[in-house]
Length: 360
Image (tube, rainbow, N blue to C red; front, side, top):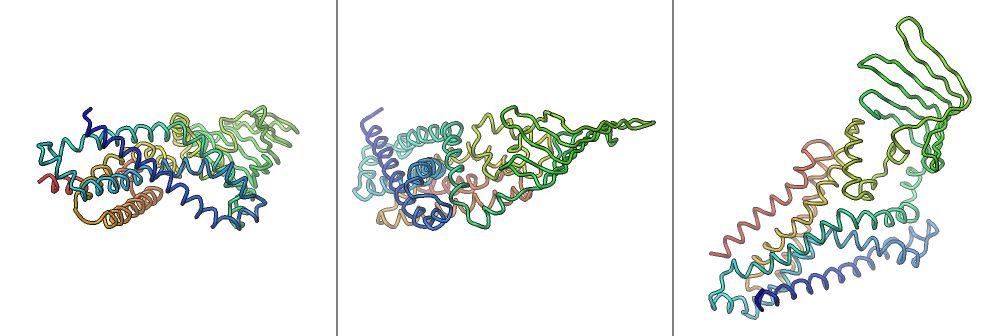
């Protein structure tokens, strides 16, 4: 690696770290000021939030918006080089623009690969702590009431099995009017009912009270009644009634297994989890797009401030684009893999246009 490569690489990484940390500190101050009232209403404290929430929230924020941080870093650093005519000097010395791009791509590779590893294995650990604190202290009163209320369960747990539970409480692990049905083809062959069902977290089994089993035969049905029965099902209450954030808490292997299970159960909301799965790779890879786009835009000899404003505007458009395509995916208008690719494809086309234009 030549001196100029080392200089650009080190400068970009330093600028990226500085901008990332600055954005985290600013975001924490803004977010905390908006959540103080809700935190106090839920009997939390600022000290607890700063210890048990914001360090993990910062990991999520920094990694999620790392492509944007790279984008702003490239614009800020390269605009300085352009303004001081250093890029012009490099080109005049016979170094091609493609060769100047090399240390930028090297920086993007390091950041992107690091981000992927964090997305796959480290971020889920941070999310567990972040989400636990959030649901305990930072939920709005209306959502908290909805979250804590008992929920009705109606689920297909396999191609042959269905369960129904009235008023299941995840907090107490208790439900009423449990029904389990098993089919062969379209024919019902077995029913298990109970007035109450209880999840024993330690033993990982369900306990039924006041139950009746019905085995259906061609000529007659066979009934068994009892007061107490222990059954083992292939799901936990968390899997049965998954939280909105459950996919965030899983590493990439756990998430893949979870998605496979939910597909077998015929979960209609499977696209939510598939979006999370695909985005863990697609978002870090967008670092390459924003690095080249930032480099191309920064070669404009305008003021640094103007280039940064353009960068911020494009960053917000990208974020909006991601959320828009995810929404369309959740509503089954487009496949999940395409929803995470469309923003990158769109900005990839813009980046290619500017890069070709600047090389000419």
